[in-house]
Amino acid sequence: MGSVGLLKNSAMVCAPLMSTSVDQLIDDMVEAKSQGADCVEIRLHAIHNFLPHKHLQLLFKNKPLPILIVYRPIWEGNDFEGDAHKQLEVLGLAKELGADYVELDLKIASDFAKNEKSSWSSGCKLITSCFVDNVTSKEDLSQIVASMQSTGADILKIVTNANDITELEKTFHLLSHCQVPLIAYSVGERGLISQLLGPKFGSVLLYGSLDGNAVPGLPSLASLRQAYGINFMDNDTKVFGLISKPVGHSKGPILHNPTFRHVGYNGIYVPMFVDDLKEFFRVYSSPDFAGFSVGIPYKEAVVSFCDVVDPLAESIGAVNTIIRRPCDGKLIGYNTDCEASITAIEDALKVNGPTNGAAFLPCSLARKMFVLVGAGGAGRALAFGAKSRGARIVIFDIDFNRAKVLAAAVCGEALPYEKLASFQPEKGAILANATPIGMHPNKDRIPLPEGSLKDYVVVFDAVYTPRKTTLLEDAEAAGAVIVSGVEMFLRQAIGQFNLFTGSKAPEEFMREIVMSKF
Image (tube, rainbow, N blue to C red):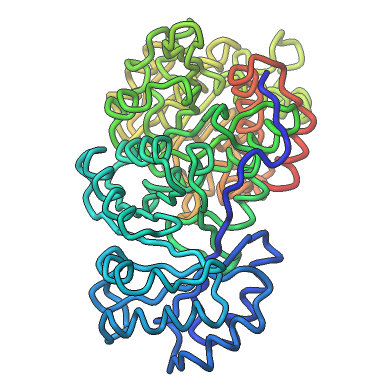
């Protein structure tokens, strides 16, 4: 098992501050420091009625941590209407008054290198930056880096706009091979892992937003320090992640990453917004990417991309966990959803006690009606788990053909989705929702009429954000025992952790995290 040491990389965490008044920026700097920032980025062009000398003096006099100064002209779409000469003048003033870093766009950095660099103070580092809207090749990026190097900058910064997560591999390659200090990342949700994994591949700085002042596409300062533990990454850190679309709801990072550190495993777990499975697995084929969780909508489709599928997952037809086998790099697919969901429901039945004459049954689910809404990946896991316990399964899905295929596989019954509203289950039935209905942010929806919930003894919801969905609230009010998707999430994550690390998961530690943070 890889070990976690102390402060394995020297990457700085920078908080970009968005306030438009100097007084608020000063307060924000103090808050950024308390949240774990190593430095802050201040955009002078965003300050209302900006007075260069006065405002810069105030900022530097009250700074609690290093400041990176940015002052961009109108060609980059900001409010500053001056020209390149004015930009250089203001940045030069910032340098003289005490800036720790100043950032120049490549468009004017060449002129600066010719006219200003010889008088530049060694106490202030120059960053030359370039935004690339469309990355076509690694060679293109290398040429841009070469142009930035010619400016004599201390640090280079290249920002791209990723249209697909696979484009980030070019960024990681650039970071790994660059011979000068480099900041490189992509913006937007599809670019998030370029921020999170930057320190592994050699980025000298990454950005995190203040809590309560979220910046689209940026992780928060708190998550960088607490959930992701970015200080502990090095070249050998193994990458695990959730393959999903969307992926912003995932709470896997706040469970898996602290658990990795707790047991001393050198790994990081990140959300991966994936559009194209085939291209994703083609591009991210290195041993660095050691395993994946699989979420909506890919649990069934991903089976065909696995080199080997565990028999249980194969029978279910859905995979929620993939491991890259170290000896040959083959992808091995598993399903930890099945046992996780069924044991959670069984435990709820045990708490509820024998019902509907079930005391004599050898298994708490045996012969009970199991009403399943949703026949996708999570639904298939639930259906096969219920079948293994001897339940009688009734399946509803908006795709009736999909429901019929699953029903045939588990010897159950499929009914058209429109009949769910009038369906009357037998007394003591179990209801399981395996659809995303009720997931944040659309929390107020439930997959069936509230009035029918009184007929179910147990109601399970695979959705775990929020922890208690509207469906569970209504079911509890109707007298049912409820089972949150959080319980299934915890149990399947324990199974995943065992597969990811090859060691037994610290179950109580993981349960404590889930109970306190979910």
